[in-house]
Image (cartoon, rainbow, N blue to C red; front, side, top):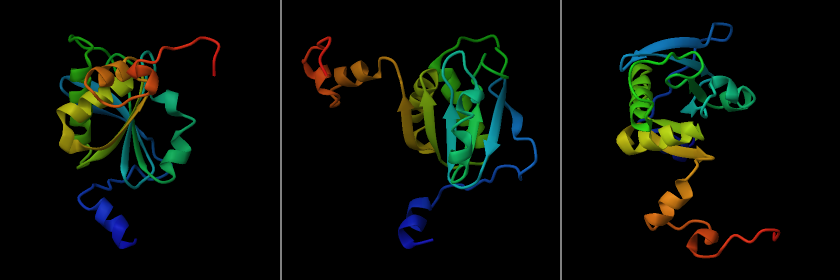
Length: 170
């Protein structure tokens, strides 16, 4: 490991997934929720959060290549996949707290979060609410995120800065 890699990895947890051949699916009791999650690979932790009406299986094609270099944690959010619903609203803020509690239970100091659609909203809220737990954030297909950032003055695609969308043109 060179100096730049060790500097980058300082303070990060390298909790390993279960040994090969052992079941990867487990449950964590967080915030009154029996949250299903899977662990694959080893290295820097990467948490995958699925889209609405989906589950960890949405990432089945990505898991092998990601787990070859990372400790991948994929979780089924409240009322999705193998995680049952509980008597509380389905809100980004609450599910973000669930993700942070899972990160704590697994002993990870910081993680990278990758969320798709609903999972992107949860990942964004987790980064806002628990900034010390999130090292990097990857948001995929987060509906409405571009206009939210544009309204807050962040540079976005030129179309968001006044240029209209023109049908039929490349």
